[in-house]
Length: 398
Ligand SMILES: Cc1cc2nc3c(=O)[nH]c(=O)nc-3n(C[C@H](O)[C@H](O)[C@H](O)COP(=O)(O)OP(=O)(O)OC[C@H]3O[C@@H](n4cnc5c(N)ncnc54)[C@H](O)[C@@H]3O)c2cc1C
Image (cartoon, rainbow, N blue to C red; front, side, top):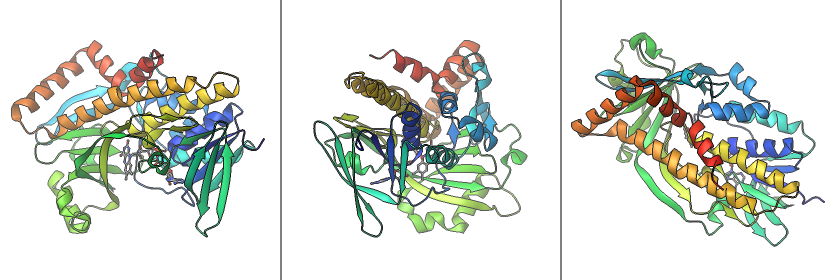
């Protein structure tokens, strides 16, 4: 039966991981992706250990290592004082085969998964097709989608996964309360060829640099350094992106005689929101469609991939005869992680970075140093920051 399959709307990391998880277990899948191709843009670039473990079951972790950078250390710094506390993921060597963050752009994952999926006869991939309406009845979901030339496609399935990102059309078409807030500042992300370690020798490959006036994050990718600045939205896109303004901000961070070479730049709004319900009959939200958070900690894409694996496994169990009520457990497990682990940690990271009160800043620093200096607390901290702990906690949720 043509409709005895799952439709995945969205061919980002979450949609393609869900599709690959289902296909690996023999569930036919159709992926509907609006873009004509995968764009090599400046988005998530950190893979945490449990994500690498999951992706190994899909056969793509090696290719990410071939194109990525292993980063066992990450750091909190003060923009004036230097290193505050350095965390070492190699303490996790008994917990995971991947005791580090792998720095690798998310499009390298979607490219690798697309290649695998394209070779699977149970998978149909539609690029350049936009979901425009979704309906469901007791037995199936009906999706209408449009191509750029205006032609329409009607697809049927037993279930539909909405992995269509932050602005999810599917979420908007459902009675979802997307609770939370929008962060006032905009985030400006740049990449540059400058080698920051020439100027800051003790800089870890991932550094969150606190400052009461302008915090910043520095992330080493395989080829470039990425710099993230919070930006006053009143500055406006044109002024914020002007080459002279970028140069001024980069020079203020690390002064040098020659101009900076900026390879990419992008600015975006950041939200902290979690959908009140993930499961709507046969339509289920995952990834950015279900939850959004600030990028401080690199947990958005990773958390979304963990949704996709969890949901893919439960839908595959339904194909094997398990009752659909199991989907309620997906929602209970993954909403708990989104709220209690990802959002809580990302908000705390932001508080540490932009705290203005000197006494509170000092208290944060003292606490971070105390954690880093105590081997037991240090390990507990990196268990949480690497998302291993949140997965273990979720496994106990019925
Ligand atoms: C500019 C930017 C920078 C970011 N930087 C970071 C970062 O530094 N660190 C970090 O951890 N996270 C970052 N993120 C967040 C991270 O990229 C997301 O958490 C991650 O991409 C979520 O994956 P997803 O598959 O849920 O959604 P997406 O990657 O957004 O994928 C959704 C897909 O659905 C498709 N789609 C949308 N609507 C439709 C439709 N109606 N029909 C068909 N297809 C549709 C889209 O084209 C897209 O391919 C950034 C996000 C943005 C936008």
